[in-house]
Amino acid sequence: CSNYEVKDRAAKGITFRPFLFKGVERAFERFIMRSSDLVLTDREHYRQHGLIPKEIGDDKYANVGFFVDGAHYAAPGDRAGLRQELGISSDKLILLYVGRLCPVKHPVDLIRVLSEVIKAGKDAVLVLAGDGESKDGMKKLAADLGVAGNVLFLDKLPQKRLVDLYNTADCICFTSAG
Image (tube, rainbow, N blue to C red; front, side, top):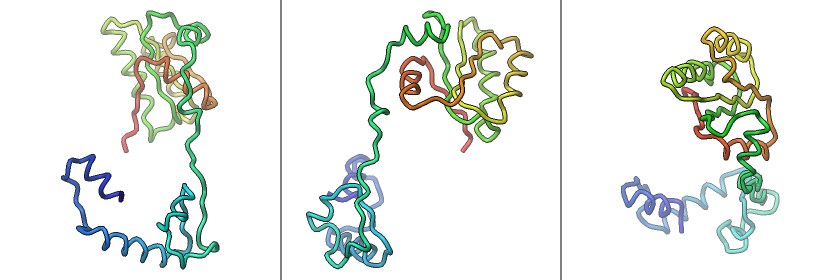
């Protein structure tokens, strides 16, 4: 089935559909492929089942494989063990941020959020996995707000470690503005 059909099913028929007939859509796809310098696919069956026009030679076609890293879907590690390793008690709320510590990502806002969470009576820790130019300013702000003991700065971590962190966190924070 085409991408448009999948989107239509997901949106229950509300999605704008520029091609009302499959034949028109296929003709348009073939035109685009013939006009392209290179056609990349993630599965060989597109070529085998005639979805790539025959006139697209091997010099204009490449199967690049499927790029999903299995580590993203690994079984979670031991939550209690990771908490213990990081020195976080089981009753603390873990707020997690993973990413660059730079102004465009607004991670400094999380220090203020943590301060408000603690003022509201919650025992919480902010775990920041990443590095960047805002790190020193964030440490200073945490000290100024009296929450430095509740902020844990980790450097850039390998994917497997991030999977464990995501599975251990109680709240995952995304602060980017766009």
